[in-house]
Image (tube, rainbow, N blue to C red; front, top):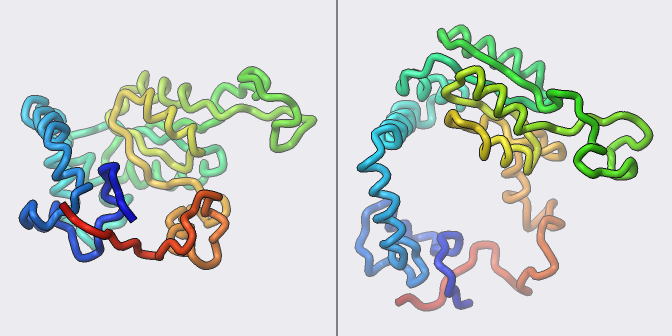
Length: 232
C-alpha cells in the first residue's frame, strides 16, 4: 500500500521517532513530523508567545509524569486544576449521568473547588424546534427535550468556570459544547451506550466481535496491523 497523505495512523509499529527523538531518516515519507515543518513551527509560536498556552502545556506534562499509571483520570483532573490555579470548575453532564455528576461534584468540592453543573436537557426545549419530526424521536408521540450543549456552555461561561468537565455528552453535542465553552474543557466520560461507555472496545474488537464497525470501502485483505512499503 502507498500512503500519500501525511498521517500517523500507519506508522510502522517499530518506528516512533517523534516520541523517542530518533533521526529524521528513520521516519516514513508520510510522517507529519517530516513533511509539515511549517505546521510545527506555527504551533510552537503559540507555545512561545501565549503564556496561558504554555502554562497549560506545562501543567499537563507535569500531571502526566507525576501521576503516570498511578492516578485515575478524576485524580488527574483535580491535579491539573490545582496546578493551573483554578478555583471554579464546571460539569456538563448527560441527563442520564446526573447521579454520577453528583458524586463527581462532591469529589471536586472535597478538594476545595467551587463547582457548577448543568444537564444536557437544560431548557426543556422540544426536538421539533430544531426541525425534527415526531417519527425522528426515540419515543414518538410524546415530548422529547433536545440536548442543549450550547446552553450548557453558556451557563458554565456565565458561572465563571475555568475548567469544564464533560460527563457523557452525545457525539456531536459534545462538539458543540467544546466549540462554545470559554473555559478549558476536558472529557471524563465519552458516551457509548453499547459498550458501557468504553468506546475503545470497538477498536480492540474490530476484527472479531465488532466487525460491523467497518464500512463498505474496507480494503480486502487489510492486515490487522498495516505495514508500510517503502520509505523516502
